Image (cartoon, rainbow, N blue to C red):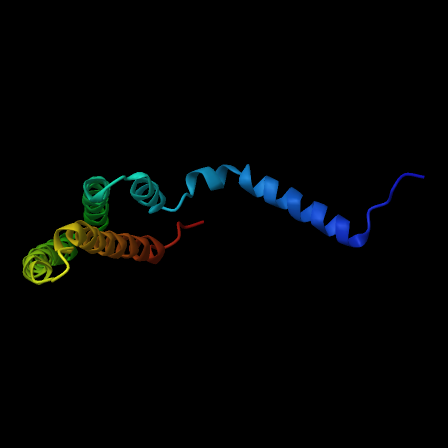
Length: 150
């Protein structure tokens, strides 16, 4: 008689099969961590200039997403709500500008000379937060819409 799998071996084989199916799933290819590209770029960077270039590239991506989410939100809102969105956008831009000014002041005062190297990452984090806020607002609006009549 052929070798029989023990219960433990059967579980291992099942776990490996599930893992292989999970890795070959179409969802894993499209649901990549949005920060992975930035991490890969930073890991491959050879110096501070390379890291700054990675951050600048990510900032461009985030600015594009912010524009897209804002546009998508504005199409879902009525005129009064759109006025609120525009006011919110102006307020956020004022906050962003004041944060940049404060970053300039605080990073220049660092004694270790790392201020210039840290600024791109700080700006990226601000943009990531705004992108997340807009994405959540859009998701809330989409989930708040009435279901179609049957």
